[in-house]
Length: 395
Image (cartoon, rainbow, N blue to C red; front, side, top):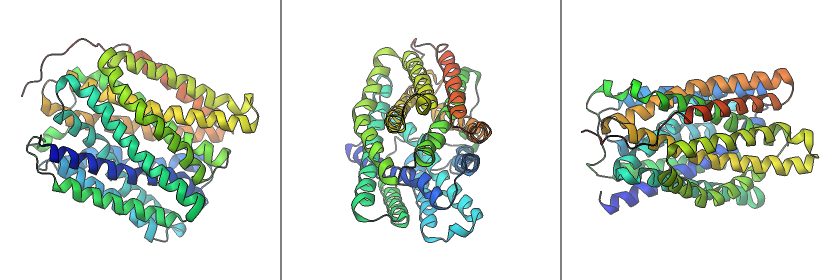
């Protein structure tokens, strides 16, 4: 691929994920500012936020005639529209509008999550896919660093307006869409048939199983990891931006390093190690406030939050595994989307169930013990995959 287009793709990815970082970091505080305070309602709101993980598969199917950079452009634009609508609408008086705009913005986010991995897989040599996916996550992490730094400085020293943050996020997303559209590269694949968007094959069953457990694990962190800090510890957007800034700084080194670990040790060992680390993190989340004083528990939970964020780098191992076992290169993108749809079914279930568990037990402990159990099953599933080389992709 022409180096010019590679740099343009990297710039577009950086820009849109900086926008996503700004929105993601203020989202829970933003909901709290709208008087959404119960764990049960917070968990239920993940339904419109995660449903697009399933809908995105059908959206990409409708766009089957476009190249992947063009789909990424549309996704960036959709995300920007959803976030911008939150900024300019009086949604404090309408839960319906809140749900609608969350759903629109989230649809764009979810299309982007897989299309970026797919673009990296297609422009990388087979033997370097794990490394390149790790490096791309490092770039996404750098974008998160930029978004977190912006929020920390703005909320600490300039302004505490959610509206400004939402408009900045919207503007960056639309800019990213324009950059994606400017890429002219024939190497990025174009689907020829609508049915090629969805693939379910027995050959990929372990990949699907890994996505099931990842979906639930991811949602506990996104929903309740943030919610513990916002509602239990009562921390501001500036505090969340600060710990995300630390996570992003560490991730700039850790996430590319994860790519090297995948290349050296294989997906199986990396995913097993991820499951063990996640189990420990969930147990610490669950019991910190029982074991430590509030100031100490705040530090411990914040560290867990940072570690949990870093562990998302192991997602490169799942994508790398899928790329390695694919029968043909045309299977990769639709199978990644199918996997994302599967993990979002469990995401929705985990968010709602976690919210009920939290409300029923009166504590966040139950939600994180639930997540710890999921980590155990995920580790057993990872242990069943093989690191042996697969056959070369057919065309």
